[in-house]
Amino acid sequence: MRIYTKTGDSGETSLIYGKRVAKNDLRVEAYGTCDEVNSIIGLAVSHLAEVDEWEERQKMQTSLHHVQTVLFHIGSELATPKEKEVMWRIEEKHIKKLEEEIDYWQEQLPELKNFILPSGHVAASALHHARTVTRRAERLIVGLKDELHTPMVLQYMNRLSDYLFVAARYVNNQLQIEEHILIPDI
Amino acid sequence: MRIYTKTGDSGETSLIYGKRVAKNDLRVEAYGTCDEVNSIIGLAVSHLAEVDEWEERQKMQTSLHHVQTVLFHIGSELATPKEKEVMWRIEEKHIKKLEEEIDYWQEQLPELKNFILPSGHVAASALHHARTVTRRAERLIVGLKDELHTPMVLQYMNRLSDYLFVAARYVNNQLQIEEHILIPDI
Amino acid sequence: MRIYTKTGDSGETSLIYGKRVAKNDLRVEAYGTCDEVNSIIGLAVSHLAEVDEWEERQKMQTSLHHVQTVLFHIGSELATPKEKEVMWRIEEKHIKKLEEEIDYWQEQLPELKNFILPSGHVAASALHHARTVTRRAERLIVGLKDELHTPMVLQYMNRLSDYLFVAARYVNNQLQIEEHILIPDI
Ligand code: B12
Ligand code: B12
Ligand code: B12
Ligand SMILES: C[C@H]1O[C@@H](n2cnc3c(N)ncnc32)[C@H](O)[C@@H]1O
Ligand SMILES: C[C@H]1O[C@@H](n2cnc3c(N)ncnc32)[C@H](O)[C@@H]1O
Ligand SMILES: C[C@H]1O[C@@H](n2cnc3c(N)ncnc32)[C@H](O)[C@@H]1O
Ligand SMILES: [Mg+2]
Ligand SMILES: [Mg+2]
Ligand SMILES: [Mg+2]
Image 1 (tube, protein in one colour):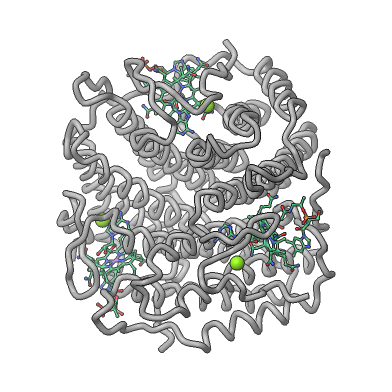
Image 2 (cartoon, chains in turn cyan, green, purple; image 1 turned 30 degrees about the vertical axis):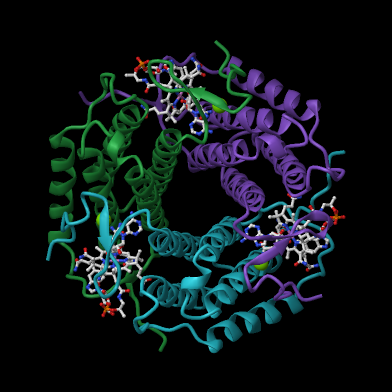
């Protein structure tokens, strides 16, 4: 089967269950941006593969692949009209998993009393990048609030950006790359 | 000649032929986002240079540079008011070229019956990233539909995201990096 | 202290001084996009660390960290309601510093009479990427023009994209990687 069907050439596309909408419909913006987050998490996974001196690397990659999976649940919820059944649902357990990982990593990190300048290992920077795009996706989803099947979508995205922040710090910490704390130039 | 002219410091800028518009005019959003796609394709080209065990690398880089070139045609169309002549036009041949390359790559790939989790070689992930931003650009251009000189702009962008998807898969396939098929966590 | 407070789970958040707004409020969009720029500059800094044959690398990294710092000033200005005092202010000296660096780099570069295709060293491509996202942030800030405490915010963002363009060219120039000039396919 050819991947290009040409059915979207005029600027319309289909949601799950087939409803036609413009490609700039807010639902499409929202799941399209989740896809963007997904691709940047992919970049972080790829860059983590370049680290070889660190044993928790694989654990983090597996965790990130799980996040990518959950983003498809969120995408499927966003692409399903409110009156229809969502097939891949987001659940409490997904949010809980994020929180557990945040707690586990944070325990090992020095407490922060300030902003940090994103940088360090390229995988850490990619995680920061994923973090900021997750927040853009969250902002778009806020505009769909009344159309959501469950408030867990917003909870998950909110938690995800914190997870990515802590993951970025953790990578640098484990690789003994020093953080750059923001020192305002005033 | 200095690159900074300061003429845009107050938030206005010029289209081709000189018409002044706000920088958040939809045309500027649209060609600005094509520029963003262009820069991410540049990242993919740069990352491909890190692959050395693969002979089709140069062919793909050349193809991506051609896409970058066509994005300037699209940018020039988007920056030209409808009543004026477009100087760098997008043509059938540009779309055809994308389709031929999709077909050539896809032939060599296992058929897909599911979504994949973006990752693998960093060049593949960068191509996925370019794919998702191309789709964002497409969504912006949809809002300009009645202002376009030709429907080929939308066709090209629609085809381009499929091209980038197949290109990403092809890179991993050639480098014998396994794809991660989405397995929903339900 | 836990990083996730859950107070933003319903889609609202706080500005500086505490005012509650929706996460898709234009102010939040604007400083959130500055944060996105910041993270991509972080990627450029990380990729520069992979270059080792070049002595001005550290100087550029320091300069980019300074830009990240100023982006926090801009973020704090965007997050402060107009009637309140901004704590980390953007000043003339910040814009001047950008201009001096642009001038210093540009002097050493061949004059340009055309567009270039972003690519070359991965750090150069990351700088192009930061450039295009800076321009997206600038477009969002234009929508807040009447809410700004100072026009220097727009001046800084306008100058910053030119700085990043010249920085990208300079990296490739110093590493003796040839630029790809746009040759339209007409
Ligand atoms: C919503 C949607 C998306 C969203 C969100 C998905 C999500 N859940 O988060 C996003 C934006 C991510 C997306 C992306 C893409 N999509 Co899409 N998407 C859809 C849509 C509308 C619903 C899919 C869905 O979530 N179903 C929910 C589940 C519960 O139901 P399901 O139908 O059983 O789901 C199966 C298939 O839809 C999917 N699938 C089946 N065959 C194929 C083949 C390919 C190539 C792909 C990628 C997926 C796929 O896998 C699921 C099996 O578990 C369908 C069209 C439709 N109305 O069904 C297109 C569709 C699946 N997508 C398609 C394509 C081409 C893509 C992209 C390659 C586009 C691109 N160039 O970027 C990417 C691939 C991304 C990736 N990483 O693999 C095509 C596949 C055509 C084909 N058979 O070759 C479809 C059929 C649309 C079409 N007619 O063109 N998509
Ligand atoms: C639309 C536009 C863009 C768009 C889309 C372009 C497209 N076709 O896709 C985008 C967003 C990509 C863009 C980006 C930039 N642009 Co511009 N752009 C324009 C604009 C309005 C029209 C250009 C065009 O497409 N013309 C269509 C062709 C058919 O006509 P043309 O005039 O013969 O085109 C020639 C020149 O415009 C261009 N050119 C000539 N001298 C120079 C010098 C530089 C430094 C550059 C980058 C280009 C350039 O090359 C073409 C020759 O084939 C012009 C201003 C104007 N009104 O002309 C600015 C203009 C060319 N851009 C300019 C600049 C500075 C840039 C950026 C560096 C800004 C930045 N910091 O990101 C980037 C460079 C991107 C790159 N990869 O090289 C300046 C160049 C100033 C100078 N001489 O030094 C101009 C003149 C605007 C200005 N007055 O400040 N741009
Ligand atoms: C605006 C804002 C942002 C903006 C813009 C900031 C800017 N200036 O450009 C952006 C979008 C960048 C941002 C990002 C984040 N932020 Co914020 N942010 C704020 C906010 C609303 C104001 C901060 C500010 O600029 N103050 C101006 C200065 C002049 O005043 P100040 O209060 O003395 O500033 C100090 C602290 O705010 C900050 N700080 C103090 N403790 C901590 C702890 C952490 C973990 C961090 C990151 C910062 C931080 O450092 C400053 C000291 O110089 C505060 C909440 C509030 N109303 O105060 C949250 C706040 C500081 N942010 C917070 C968080 C969690 C984050 C993120 C980690 C979120 C994420 N997952 O991405 C990131 C971190 C980014 C980074 N690189 O470090 C939390 C910190 C919670 C904690 N103590 O653990 C706060 C308190 C909000 C909250 N209640 O949840 N933020
Ligand atoms: C850390 C600070 O970031 C802001 N904030 C909260 N959520 C988002 C988002 N999705 N995008 C951008 N900024 C956000 C709030 O102002 C918060 O206090
Ligand atoms: C694969 C699926 O992606 C969605 N789709 C089609 N075009 C875009 C776009 N530009 N941006 C985001 N999503 C899109 C449609 O729902 C399609 O069926
Ligand atoms: C180089 C050209 O880029 C356009 N331009 C100026 N500022 C922006 C921005 N923030 N985003 C996108 N395009 C912009 C103008 O058309 C200018 O002439
Ligand atoms: Mg949050
Ligand atoms: Mg499509
Ligand atoms: Mg400018």
